[in-house]
Length: 297
Ligand code: OGA
Ligand code: MN
Image (cartoon, rainbow, N blue to C red; front, side, top):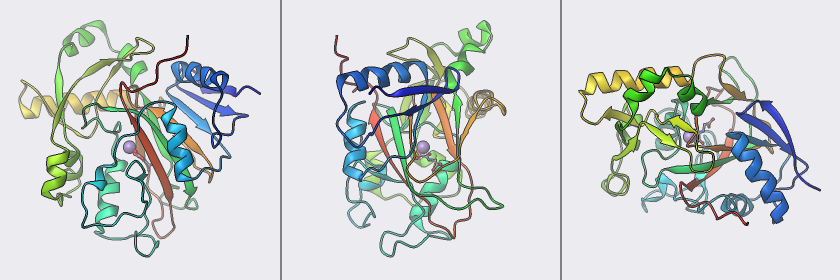
């Protein structure tokens, strides 16, 4: 049986059904998934049951999983024991209970509420992210912890040619600690700062598989090289706002068993608020750009 691909938002989001992602995939399955991924930046797989190891194996079909940014310290015990597994939950590693206040894990994860693309602060940058829901909070007045996505290729293509020409060759500096500092959180250890130094990324990148270009910005970007801090930051804010215009985004309402896979080179995303008294257990694996396996001829 081949996976079924249903478009949710043309050229941007699709839902894949009739596929169990916990099992090894056949070459035909992978062909269908690569085609779906070339045509859509966000793929939704519902009703899946996967362990952490199975989620990592599924991600490996799309590239090499990178290392979790909070795995560089040995004085803090993580909840999940695999260095590739990003703990996007609001849960305490020791007690499993929801975190509150200034808890470090909570503060770091609050950065996910800002529009970003994963691991723009790394070289190589993030490739695909695969986020899987183990527990989802009930809908409340604050929201239900949905995740919102924006299409940065469509945003680039909608710019006028003068603007596109202006952005050509520009580079921004991206730094994990910058997005956290904008929320007032600066508690990073020397080993974390050493492992995750600021990096430069082009403002416009070309997608290797599709050849489409996209605006490459994120809340991790602090300034533009060769431009004043203020002017550069204003341009970054303008591009982020352009790419995330209301009405152009897709909002994913999570159900337990959903796995959402997105291409970080052609999207932005952010998490929305929720009632933090309830567990929200989402776990992510992100691959590195350029590590996609060669496609069989
Ligand atoms: C992420 C992220 C948003 C969310 O996992 O990279 O930004 O909704 N998550 O939790
Ligand atoms: Mn993210």
